[in-house]
Image (cartoon, rainbow, N blue to C red; front, top):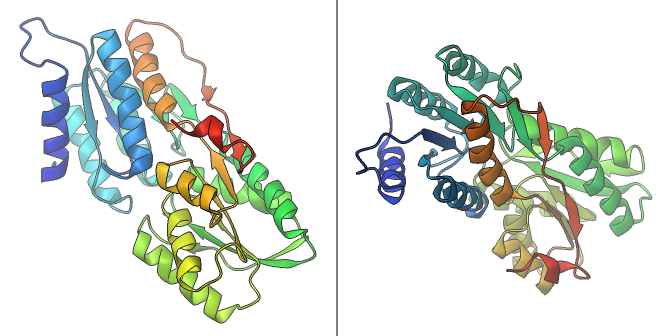
Length: 305
């Protein structure tokens, strides 16, 4: 059921955690929406550091793309068969992952969600951004950038079934109300090339578009690149989620104007820490909000490592 990439991820993580120990260690898994990408590598890094600190065996898994929802279900099924002690997961599709999460819980595995939640919410705890609030912050920033006045704004999101992205869109739309003209939301399914194509087609079809809002760290760089290629960088404004190295560079260069900063490394670390608390019998709060900040050129230095 595991694909080769997932197996490789498990193998490496086990080696790093010292799987040759004779004494059985507690084993926890972190399942991202994808195996790679700057955002998910930050989650992985936070989880690995926390696991090393706590002496936990860590398995980090993810599919090659965020749109492989069936593949993510298979990964969790495999973890249930392995009888891991805990799972921290970011559901690629909140509804589609709910049944297998329940299956893990029913099998006695401690489960928390990170970054995005399930619709059933039968996990112990959600750790991550208050996504509707984050969307509201993005909406307020967009009104500042465009001045309102029914300015035309394009929106690109990731996978439609992801609850966190849907909540960001809701918060954004509530914040801007009828002060902006919002074009139809278009999904890129976590694919940079598709995001670039959407941006290019939008610019061509709507030469008066004032700005783009992207709900993921994949969409932002793609839009910025499309605007640079078309000679409209800086003229058409961009607000994107996340503070990956690529996006921070684009912000400083002026092809992106505002970033909505989450804390993916903290999510990974708290995922491991919370699972260990639950395994030891401690009660977890239903939600741990990791916070959100709007990043501009004025405060970008605070987010550079």
